[in-house]
Amino acid sequence: MLLSQNRSVDRIILSSFERVNGKKMHGALRFFLAYTYLCVYIHRMNSIQKKLIADGVDNVKGFGYPSCDKTNILTDIIYSKFLLYMLKKKRGRGFDKDIDGLIDLINAAK
Image (cartoon, helix red, strand yellow):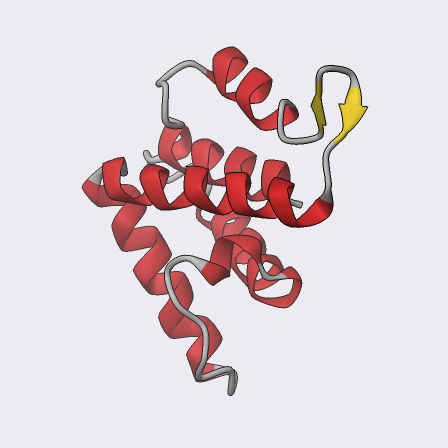
């Protein structure tokens, strides 16, 4: 589940970070918009997704990355790889919709 509760709408929103009026968006502006989107998304996340993120942060910190938090685990290249691996291992346990929403969000933030 992404921000709009509709994956196709969210893909349109996230793809709009790439181009505005047909012109490639400046990297800093694209990052700012994507970061803002992630912050709003994290605020509206359900409790299962929040728990998955918290577990991921704990796992990454356990591997010696103390600066990992609930926002940069979705955007940082190294942290998000840890989270993706963890989420893929948890598939098939009844929370696939929530896991797939987080995986889509991480892939869109790349």
